[in-house]
Amino acid sequence: MTVFLIIVVVALFGITLWQMSKIFKLSQGKRADGSQVANDEDNNLQGKLMLGFVIFLYVLTIYCFTQYHSFFLPESASAHGEDYDKLMLISMVLIMFVQIITQGLLHFFSYKYRGNKNNKALFYADNDKLEFIWTIIPVIVLAGLIIYGLFTWTDIMNIDEEDGDPLIIELYAYQFDWRARYAGEDNVLGKANVRFIEGVNTLGLDASDTYAMDDKITNELHLPVNRKVIFKMRSQDVLHSAYMPFFRAQMNVVPGMITEFSYTPTLTTEEMRTSEFMVEKVATINKIRREKSKALTAAGDEALENYEFDYYLLCNKICGTSHYNMQMKIIVESEEDYNAWLATQTQFKEQISAQASN
Ligand SMILES: [Cu+2]
Image 1 (cartoon, rainbow, N blue to C red):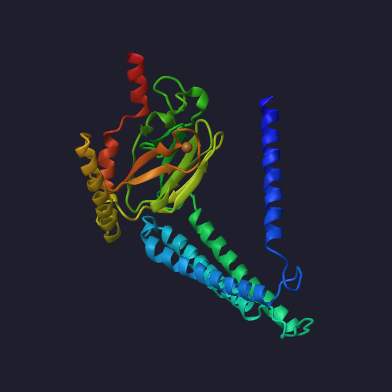
Image 2 (image 1 turned 60 degrees about the horizontal axis):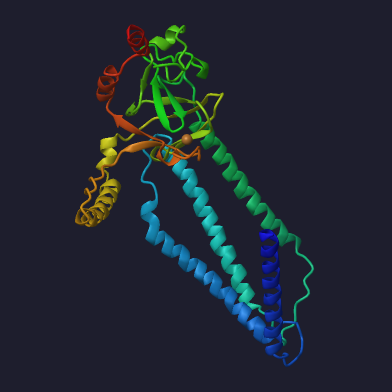
């Protein structure tokens, strides 16, 4: 009954609107020429609106670039990031250049040649030369861009374990956290399967595989600077995505398969913290925090802590309710610091023997 009443009310409301619009139309009176066809006055208005719209777009673009440029990422903290940024910059400059010119011309001509009774249209069938030019130029530019992109992509996706002496690390995703697994002395990750997950063996390592014995599972990702790292990614449950924006790296983490990505970190956490970009950004954040803290302390709450920059591994697939908080700290440091930290981490065999003795 309620549903029926709602439908009746909505239908009556619709009829009311329809009748009101009819009354409104009648009250406008008939146009002098009684025609539905746009006259010079309409054309004039539409032409000017077209021109106004493109000017608005240009002003908005310039405003966004000047106002929000600080939201761009700083220089890349990985070796391949430079190529990646170059490809992105070339593509964007090209797109911007073409779009500014074509949109400008489109709207300007709409304005310049707006309808006028005194004008007569020129009959112009076709022009082979013109058509050839506007076909061949985009073909060459796009082919160049695609080939350049493919070469860059192949370079970035180099996950060759024989190339140099890469560090092998597993990134393990689950709702809603990350774990890193270091391959140990042998630099070979032991086999693993979700079916082996039990007790302390939270990543499902195969206890019968000798390669697994010296593996180290950590909840922070430490990386030695200037050494190539190959990440092998596994998911326990749903689709996640390993996102490390400062290193220009992102790869889906898919249940039931191992996906890979590789990069060489080039800037330590400390170097990024002391870079001009980051010093300025952190100062702005802390200024906002101090202001918020004033209101908080006045209300008897605790003040906000000072923010300090850290790299993070984030999840970039909406994987559930706590997706927003799925992150792991990344620390890029010197080879010595990295080795010292790794030495303090427990091996898998120590973990299982501790569980057994318990
Ligand atoms: Cu996730």
